[in-house]
Length: 153
Image (cartoon, rainbow, N blue to C red; front, side, top):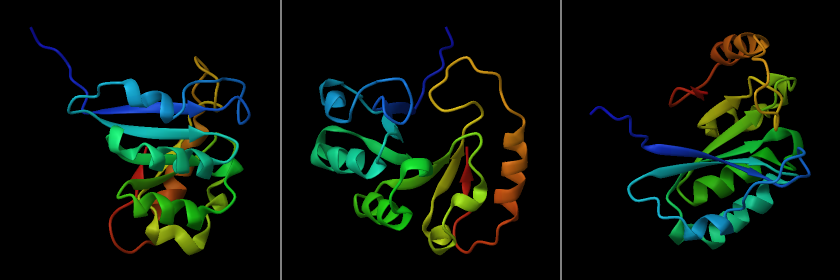
């Protein structure tokens, strides 16, 4: 029997303040057995840095690969990237469907591992995919960058 196996799990961390949903926190994940899987934490929170600090506190229990912070509530993008990189995780910035690419600070552009583009409004499941995302992909690809290619997801 063929079975599809995932190497990486995307986990939404939602605090009921950024959007109307409430999920789990990094601390809640410490009881999960991930085996050889890695995890990407998508921080849809009022202040993503708070969740980064919580993940740092329990880092030995979590196989974190990437940390994705939504820019809409982020106090300082450079601090977010520095703190994530300090833990040897990949920093990704998330943009909600109506957040322009220009919200990404030009000063951190070459330090960023990637950008996650929301195809539906954050926190709303089963929404209709907004084709405006393709324009953002084109904008991101056109931005000059040195070093590793930017991941666009």
